[in-house]
Amino acid sequence: MGCLISMITKMIATFFGIGYFPAAPGTAASAVAALLAWFVFGLPLNPLIFPFFLAAIGIWSSDCFSKQINQKDPHCIVIDEVAGMALAVAGLPRSWQVYLAAFVLFRLLDIVKPGPIRRAEQLPGGWGIMTDDLLAGLAANMLIRGFLLFAH
Image (cartoon, rainbow, N blue to C red):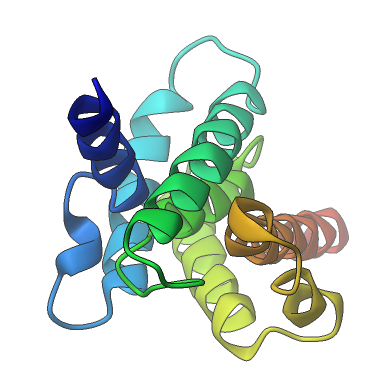
């Protein structure tokens, strides 16, 4: 049973192995997440269900997997980027321009990590791994909403 749980946490935390992509695994995971979100957000669901589901399993799996490999926040864990990107586009219009803007803003905020986003990394375990990306996704979403509000 322990081996099965280890395999499941690794599969979720690395988002089915995307975390082992040789160059920019976080960016690769974010791109896949944008495509996945495009399809999921086409379904008649509350737009927050998907990102919050990803956040919940991400906190658990990233905490377990980081402990298994004895690293605080390894690059191979990308479920945080997947959840953050899903939050970045949650409830926004489904257009390629909006999704591209969300992708670019999310990656920029995730890499630069201004203010509270950087401080969130200091939270313990899976909370620290996930929260900075969720805040980056939320910030990207709010910036796009503000732009769309003023553009109309």
